[in-house]
Every structure is written in C-alpha cells, then in structure tokens.
Length: 306
Image (tube, rainbow, N blue to C red; front, side):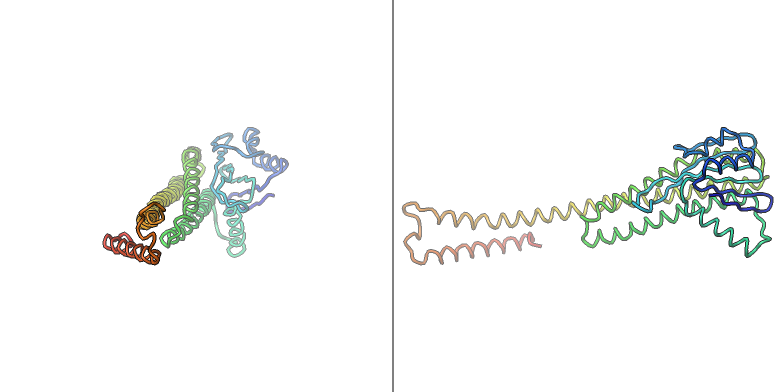
C-alpha cells in the first residue's frame, strides 16, 4: 500500500506492507540506488544508517505492545530522506504513522494553503513516534499504580507476577530506545552534513534527540519505581510469612503442654494417678483447661497473640 502526501516543495511516500513492485516503482521515481533498494525488500534485524547518491537511509525500531498477546516487541521503520522527499517503509501497521496520515489529510482539506517543509515533516514524524512510546509508557505506569494499591491492600502474593511483567516491559522499552540513540545521531548528522535544510535543521535535530532522550529517561525512571515496588512487595511478603510462622509457633507451644498432660494420664502403668477415680475425666479436662488458660494469659502478656 502506498500513501502519498504532497507538501510545499516535496512529498512524503509511506509504504505499508510493500510489494517488490511497489518498492521498485518508488525507488525508480526518486533515483534510489540498488544497494538501498535491497534493504527495503525485507525487515532489517538491527538499526542501520547509510548514505548514498544524495539520500540518507535509516532503519530504526520502536517498541510497541502486541495487539494479540500484549507482549512488548519492536516495530521497524525505514526512512529514506532526500532534499525534497521522505520515504517511510514499514512491514506492519504502525499506529502513530497511521494517525499522522489521517491528520495530514484532514489538515490539507481544512487548510489547503498550509506550508510544510521536508525538515518540518521529518520532525513531526519522529515527534508522533516518540509521543506514541510515551503514551505506552504512561499506560504501563497506570497499571503499576493499580498494582501498588493491590499490594498495600493485602494482595502481595498476586502482585508478584504483575510487578515482574511491568518491570520487564519497561526494561524492553528502555533497551529499544537505547538501541536508537547512536543510529539516530548518525542519521541526523548525515542529514546536517548534506545541508539539505539550512541552519534551522540543527534546532530540529536537537529537538528530535531531546524527545528521544526524555522518553528514554521516563522509561528508566518508571523501571526504577517498579524495582523499588518489587523490593517492597518482597518485604511485605516476608513480614506476612513471619507473622504466619509466629502464629504457628504460638499454637504449637500452647498445644504441647496439653498433649503432655493427655499423654501422662493416658498411660496404663500401675499406680497411675486418678486411674480408679470415677471423676478422672473431668479432673483431667479441668486441669487441661486451666493450663490452657494460663498459657493464653502468658501469651497475652508477652503480646504474642497480637
């Protein structure tokens, strides 16, 4: 699928799930070399920056959440930027670019004389992608808030997995953004060295890099919060387990004297006390209740029952 958006002095071509024919037709239109054309036929496993015959190429990956399984994965976007055009190639639906296409189409209908330049559109593209990652981070952070509330409401056991999954998501986002840093720097420097856009591009490049850095710092901060919550959750679980062990110990300590009394009077040895007494059962029961009462008073004074 090919989307074409013409602006003042240039054009943005967005290829979604492109066929080989669509790729070749686009590369022939903008005189892109075969070396870069080959990179567009299939996804690139790692970030890549290349320059060739008046264009600059960038293959970069952005973290996103899977629609089906909900797992974090990377989506690749390939950029080819020339003086008067931007080509983006993607091998699946990428929501922020789809929304940007709709936005630009609407804006063109409302303000047909609105001027957009190549450098401005490039900044808008990266801004929408960074905003999408930031929104995703805030969504995961909201889950972290709910998990924190559950944790302090006595659901420490059920929140262990939730905190681990959230921390894993932040770690994946942080790693993906870290992998962008060096290629994005080289890409923007390559564009600046070609002097396509004049002196104003330096400020735009700084804003693009600053936006990525801010989003990466946000992911790092929330991951640190998730790590602290995991440690707090572990402490709460340990405290609860200690309370359970304390309760079991007190019960065992209280039952042992009663078992000892029952064992002594249960022996059928000669001369056993109360063996011939018709009220032996009630005497032994009273003795056990008395000892049990004394043990309860002792535990209460030691504050072992609170």
